[in-house]
Length: 384
Ligand code: PLP
Image (cartoon, rainbow, N blue to C red):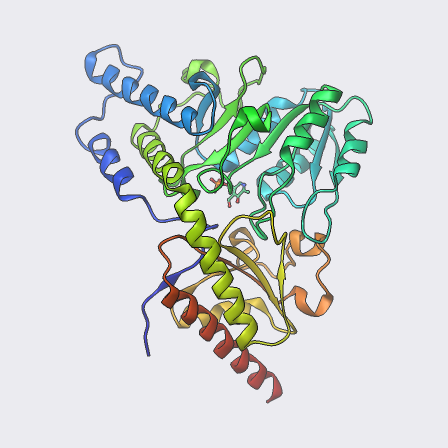
């Protein structure tokens, strides 16, 4: 039996870009100067950080001073909400399919500050209902709105430009969690017209534990982390020079190859869906068909438990996840699966396969064949 690992969980995390690794190494070895130090050794690190900031800004159509480094998507989301909402609570509009980094932060703001939160529903394709979000934003006194650019479980891309237009019309600050989108689909913050945008390097072949928050010039955001005043006092803590450099190189490389990768992924996705449909009956694909992240497939199997399926696939060296990786190990039904109202008999059998451009056609066939094998096995055991 072949046991070569096939990694198809790229929405959870990605492999580190080789060039990014090489760019990082000097800063993990000899060039360890503190960027805040006044001597040349420190200043060299500072210069490199500023070059990285410029490169990242260029990749998303921002200005360098609008990019602030954080420890990743979770911190960026926490900061946008904690900093974007008033200290005495305020009113917040978001969607029911956001990542826990938004939903849990919103819950904590309700408890800590008494923030009022309104949740916008989504349609059966997992796309926010524009008429509903318009109505919620038009209620008056809304301070902040946050809707994700692309959903991490089903890949549906959200109409952020229209949402941002509503926000501007009603004088509401607009944030988007673009963690799954940056480096995968074309992003220009000026076209999106958002005030804030979260990103995380490990989703686009950069290192884990580093990310950034785009904060449009003129937007006042109180800090989440206080200390030595780095990042012009907006985010304290000694900068992670190596990771910042790695993130910049990985993003530039991904953006440069974006179109080529998209074409490969669309083809691989199509092949995998066809093969799954050919081998397995009682299957349904979730999320928007047209406007979606290429290569991310959410698929549900009738009367199957995703945990059993994942376990058997793992034994055959195939890495995929149930709903989102953040729910791994939990028996609770994913809030996204609930929100898109998948028929009951399919809900628990939902898995996410997220491909990368390095996956081969051979990988695709093996994934489909092993899913078919695992489902047969589960059904046989159930009959015993
Ligand atoms: N937002 C979305 C949409 C995500 O998919 C994730 C990670 O899965 C995060 C936020 C959290 O990012 P990080 O892992 O960098 O904290």
